[in-house]
Length: 332
Image (cartoon, rainbow, N blue to C red; front, side):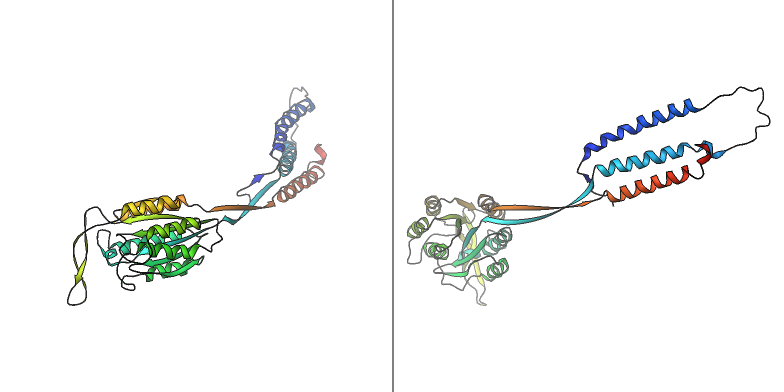
């Protein structure tokens, strides 16, 4: 009953200092009230009264009652806190994902695309207050899912992203332009594109710099990520007779200058991911850079706990009065 108790008026506990003073006064008063008589022998005095010896119990009961009353005055109470949050500045995010054949390279485990999807899923789950959309691009681009606050839809769409749906190639400008198109009508305070690629722009009819200018026009910040190890990577180079991919070592080519330029002109930042760990760190950093402002409201509900103490004090005082006027009556 008295777990997690707090006191609204703890200053009343200073009154407890009066109890030791009252005890000293009682001892001094009782000593002065006791008379002494000198006689040669106590033979013949056979009356032994236990009630007279227990008389101080009455005063102890009264002190306990006063202690309970003082504690009740300090207002013991429990506190129940309920919290509500309100998003004051939401962020709309579009993740543009390269799904060209080179994303099947195995320099990240098990391959670039699968590693990206795992990290991106964690990123999405960590943004419960933002709307997120997905754009896939290779030699062309399309919207996998428009921006939505339903994370289950986004995660399912992310899981479905695979190579082979789009014409092969790397149309960075198309991927960026499609992402801008998804965000241009957004009313969010902050609009962000996270564009990932592992190659150079070699397809599409929209130049990446033109798409970057569109992002600037609509106030959209772009974070770019170059994915791939330095040097060579085990990548698909053809097909086997059974239709499976044949792998071989290929030079990793990423147009880092272009990605840096896109990030710079739009107010974003460029990152390079060479393995699974660095990719995770990049998304963690973006997560920290793009914080959603949340206003938190706390509601406090107090439950007073002084009533049992008042009840206890009443019982003790009633007990003291009953004993004083019954068993101890002839000794008072």
